[in-house]
Image 1 (cartoon, helix red, strand yellow):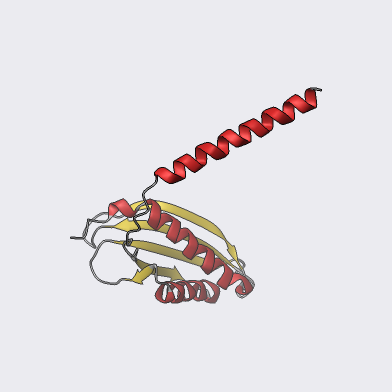
Image 2 (cartoon, one colour):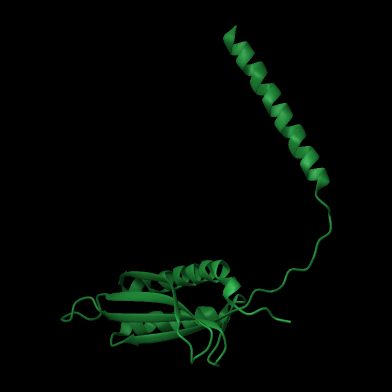
Length: 155
């Protein structure tokens, strides 16, 4: 008997929820608008002596260059700066892996103080460079969306 009342109550709640969502959907105007293309200017700066870190920085630049969300920027304009530093994980075996750090900064111009946004530290092997670079691009996109308000409005 209690299961029947519970089921009836559940059906009633579902019906009211569906009716509420249908009413809310009808009240939203159907006027599509073109959204502005989001193109975040970035600059990648690398510091290190190992080949794996160098490949990571190069791969990251390639992915930014191929993406329609980012523009590699070397001019003195507001941009996200991505600083990559790496060193061999083991000095005696430099091709095994690299310890790396990536720091995301915002720079309004080359003459102004840079603002810290985020950091990531880890170890990467030569086989994992492409995967890590893709993850760094994704994190950069997340940071670009979060801090888009830092850029001056375009007229």
